[in-house]
Length: 433
Image (cartoon, rainbow, N blue to C red; front, top):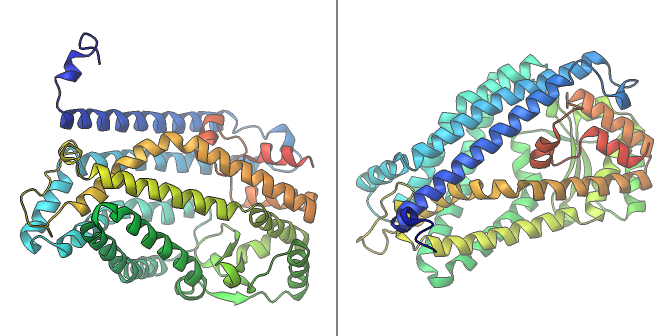
């Protein structure tokens, strides 16, 4: 590097450069996210009074305005969440929050695996506690304001307690095992840790439909024999098998609707929200299921899992290198555990700091992953139009956009970064119906 060009940068130590890089990344991400949200708000507001021409005979002005108002309300909450997220990130890192928590637990518990597990659990618990008021507001104010919330305070608290206990029962052993492997697995511990995590994720996909999801929702066999016969025939001619067709009581929490496959191999299930069955006709239900089958036909799920597994492997390898660098800790406001016995290392600190830094970098790549996801949706739509009714899929999508108050006029740049599904205008135009 030419010292005439950047003499001040050359005079900085590696830790200071890390601090500067982190600050620049944080501010850049903050500015881009704020810019995207303000663009979205402006674009939706400017188009609030007029239904797009392609939908004028289908969507009423009142429904269009409800979708606009719902989008704007969610954006206001997103701005608040962005401010809180940024403040927390600064608080944990450069302002010394994580360092103080680590030193406190070190004094209470002493060095070792117990301290490391306790550090990650305490970090997670405090973060959830800080975000709790905003979560409550989203459910009982925002969603209720637009008629979507069906949950009660009792159910909300029950879900939170169940989720916490389940996370502890499953998460603590997994976390302890990975931290132990990090300590005892040698130079290539990250390959062993990656294999453990991949195996765990595959196991969860297999056991979740039968053992975990029923803890939160009731699943009953689909009773509509005519619909069951139609979707069975659809699956037969598409070459798919499923363990069964089930209805989930999603209406006890929300008026939003969905349908999905869950499980892996012979344990795959087709699940419909009860709200979806109330909204769509048999033709439309068949078309929606055909769309989901399209994802399987094009191996979108397998491709997504492969990309996630590869990304996780790269992430573990990067963590394995960067956790050995003292400047990584000091540059983020943390004093690493130096001069202690072997059991007292920085594995938990490294994991927490790494998971806080990586999203700042990966956010810039989100347009790529979002574009890939939207392309897959187009492919699934084409498959559904071929194996079911294209007009039924169109009417089903319009009902879902309408019932879920999805805006018809999103900002194009907001779509590029955040939309995993194409906007209604692009999606229906591509279908050509």
